[in-house]
Length: 424
Ligand SMILES: CC(=O)N[C@H]1[C@@H](OP(=O)(O)OP(=O)(O)OC[C@H]2O[C@@H](n3ccc(=O)[nH]c3=O)[C@H](O)[C@@H]2O)O[C@H](CO)[C@@H](O)[C@@H]1O
Ligand SMILES: C=C(OP(=O)(O)O)C(=O)O
Image (cartoon, rainbow, N blue to C red; front, top):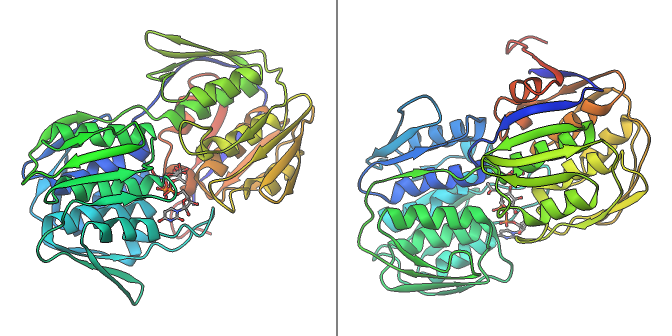
């Protein structure tokens, strides 16, 4: 298992190129299952989750080819299996999203139940109810979801009690090939949903209102191939903005977009970080002097839960106290004990964390527990006195590409130590 060594105390200057969004790229790859012709995707992030999705699509019989390196993929072929097995779904929860497309295209699907993960129990009841509203017959057996729609799916009205991102995407994809009209009420409004709808429309789907909370889909008989570019990763962009905020410096986040992340930019500015939109991306400047602020995670357009851990790290060295309330996942504070081991002063009270800013953090051996928690520890390491050793970086590799390259290019001292598999 690789680990990172980080030496704190360097300002960050230069440019970081923001990659394609993990949370869009994965869904666009799944959308290819709905198409009769190949889907060509560009700006695909070079991350482990995308490689896992390639394995899953391969398992279903699909052919995923690199056209010009890992960032441009061609996806197409014939579906020869309708089963998403446990060993892949348990590695990556987004695998559940093949359920809707397989049902719509093949009339049946067998997908392992994903189960919980480090940040919460993460049930999929809303996905299943949504698909049932389109006429799917669903049973659960031996840890698997068995779904059937022998006469095809029928358009229906799906009212989500909570705007679940995954449930919205599963129902949206299934509805593109259903007979008749589907309305998804209280749909998630994340920019990645709009990206998915835009790609599906480019493939011939008839989707309206993908950014509005009520999505209308007129089912069509078939979808065709298309060429589409994955949107930039707003979470990666916000993560590097926090790095500059803490370490101090001046960095252009190439490809970053203000419109995708107004709540994050508002919070950065409140904390004392300068953010401006330029033609090429977002310019972030900071003198490293930060103020404490209060934050609550919410569905989009509110402050994203996927930026919570990074802000926690940043606010741990701000002047004054901050409070972060996590409303999306019930167990997303696993980074707190690790940050405290580096000298942070953070107390958890129920769903909130009270962060009392400290003057300095000190380098330590710490352990990644989930994707965003991993990066919060890198951020802490960038400003800590001495050396930080971050283990279990496979969590980080799921969703951040070329971290050590991107940060070192801006002056950070960070290196990956490769440990051959099998070594102790
Ligand atoms: C691959 C991907 O895109 N992942 C993102 C997606 O996850 P994901 O699609 O899993 O997130 P959801 O919006 O579905 O989940 C939010 C909350 O709703 C609950 N819930 C969800 C579905 C369901 O059927 N029943 C239910 O109770 C979940 O347990 C969680 O507490 O959106 C999250 C919220 O912005 C992000 O943190 C994840 O990075
Ligand atoms: C929670 C995340 O991803 P996933 O839903 O894939 O676990 C994330 O991207 O922060």
